[in-house]
Length: 194
Image (cartoon, one colour):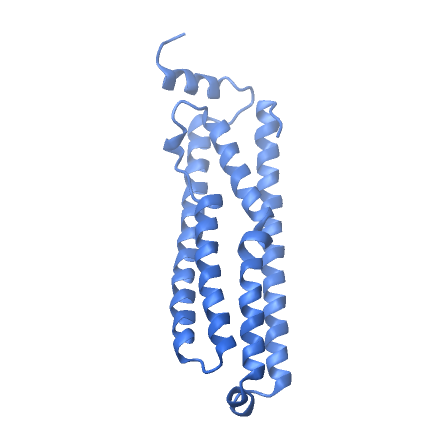
């Protein structure tokens, strides 16, 4: 053996029977890192757009409940951005240090899987109270009721929003299952278990 921890980690990752070549594992880890980074960048840009739009609503919408609901959505957006960073930020493969790359890749897959599985609690649920308060404010605003779309259209939009949130949840559960399959593949190679 050698005193170089990086070399020992590399040797440990190569010694796994049936494991793909180290370069293939490294490429896969780099691709996964870039995918997560790109996804999070899109999410952060969306957060900026939501904060800008709903902050303006606080000042331009007439009814107090519309203003409160808009402010609640802004706060929910900040919370979601923080949770996205905390739960699902991208970790570069270089951060593995002396850890075998397959072990690092598995940890990253677990982290992303867990974030996707719990997405209802930290990504969807925080927006619901603000949307409900804002919708009630829209219903109580006589100007909005008189000039806005008919009531059935407003309820249709509200139902569509609910359906969209359900689709977001469902797609994330599919993604979590896909990540679980990749974790199982690594476990099969290494003999490890969750």
